[in-house]
Amino acid sequence: MTTTADKAAPLQKPELVSTDQPPLKKQRTVSDLNQVDQLKQLTTVVADTGDVNAIKKFSPQDATTNPSLIYKAAVMPEYASIVDNAVAYGKGDLSVTMDKLAVAFGTEISKIVPGYVSTEVDARLSFDTEATINKARDLIKMYDEVGVSKDRILIKIAATWEGIQAAKQLEKEGITCNLTLLFSIAQAIACAEVGCTLISPFVGRIMDFYKKAKGVDGFAPSEDPGVVSVTAIYNYYKKYGYKTIVMGASFRNKEEILELAGCDRLTISPALLQELTNASADVQQKLDAAKAVNMDIPKIDMTESVFRWMMNEDAMATQKLAEGIRGFAKDIKKLEDIVKAKISAKFD
Image (tube, rainbow, N blue to C red; front, side):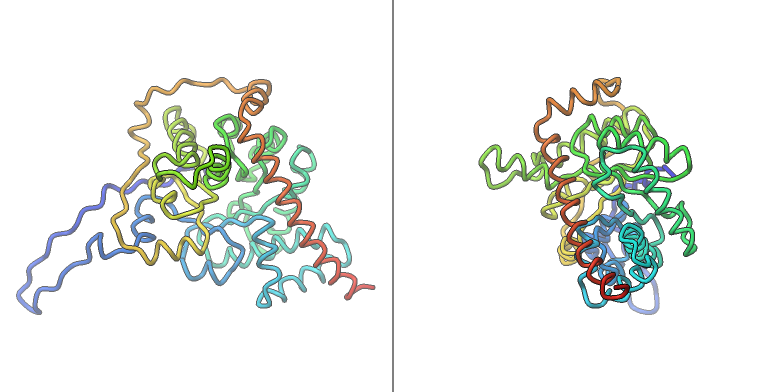
């Protein structure tokens, strides 16, 4: 499934409907809706967490996880049984146990959300196309064992050139992919041209880079470099008819989220979902596919050499991609240490 989310028409405040009996009752208006509910009328809302209970609270369409989020969830007492069951399944094999743990959390999440669940490939495979393909196949096989169809799962892969080529093969096999750690138009175009189902362009981490580079405390929402980046990617995709879903990710504040209202999908942490739930100011559509079609945006013919040159010229994207891979690898190692201790306690 590679269709983009339908865009709702501009919200209108309904007129009062007169009746004889009982007394007139005011209908619900836009201002009565909290900002999450308003946002859901413009964008598919996704929960960015491994915490099953948090996902239940906000009723998102999809859910995304990553090694950092799985680590945070795995050390929570309420999920100890998930970890223990994965250890038993792995029978002392660390790699199998880690895969099973990711699939176990994804399986629980799939029981709550009606749409996609994203499960990430080991970040240490980010520069190995074949290993990424094999790992993705293993994860899908594990999901199949517990009755979760592959059309419910997005295999999450870092948007390196090697990762994008892995996604190209996996998509041909009917294994849908979510390309993550995406910070540049070069990465976005390369993903779209190989037919990736979905991309996760980051917002907050781009802002972090430019806050430090420019020595400022922040940006106006419409001028936020992360917002500008995702907007440019969205408009490019719609201009040239790419079907790959754009899912903005990595938000630092709710203003960044609201500035991307109308994007195909937005994956949002529980903390920011709560902030949006507590707010009721009107949400305006910011991104519009129909308008993007008529924009003057030059076409870029993407090849490996063009990709590598554009990344070379983009210090922010190069730094943040490498930093993100290192960060996810670090959290995988931390989770492995926990799992190793449990394996030793059970099998030694």
